[in-house]
Length: 157
Length: 126
Image (cartoon, rainbow over all chains, first blue to last red; front, side, top):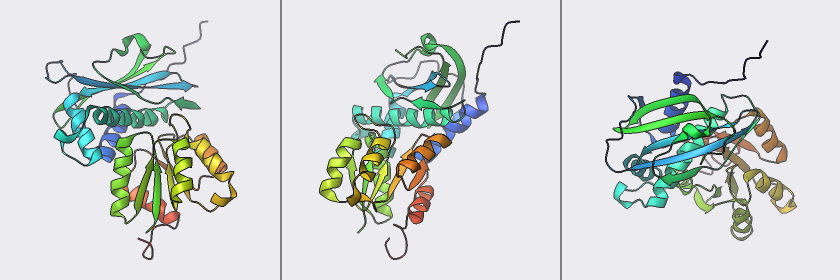
């Protein structure tokens, strides 16, 4: 008899709970479930990914708008949105991805290690990184926030 | 005034910690990784270090090990502030010489509670 694959999926409520806690603790903002974004919002996207290796292998992908990245950076750096630079926006989103990744890691089999975040301006396509194991489509301050958990050994591109 | 060295590769989270610590009455200095922190430590002589785990060049655990290998820093309080939440990691850090452990994400109240446990925050010091 074939053995069932060792699959670890996160349910929607777990992913929402950890992301909501990161958003609220670090930014003081509310995060709510929302329909998946249509890509119609202006201003481009910022994406970040952290890899998990060890007893569970995969990656956590965070994508939001450049505008939300600016809101996050302004809140974290304690300044106005018009005062934050692009490196500061990327730094803020990278740290949020790092915190979400760490929280997700605590829900998975261990021991595991978390990589440093990789952050860039643009849309992420996590489909090539492995098997989707969790998806959160949410909204904060009117901006879409998406978190995708992917199980697989592939190094995120 | 109690001087705190905040060690984290994210400038954004250093800014968050700086704001909280300044509100609590601390003086804050910063470093972006463990190697930079060792240099800062020698020159600035802080009273407390907040240490992230995952950083480029030298991670937080290696920093803790390096600090504890130097007898002149034997009494320096080290608080890990990290996303590494597994019990094995907590034990590893405490065994290496960290005094306390705070998991990200954290609130100001949680940070304050850890600083009280370390004896660096209180009516006589704040």
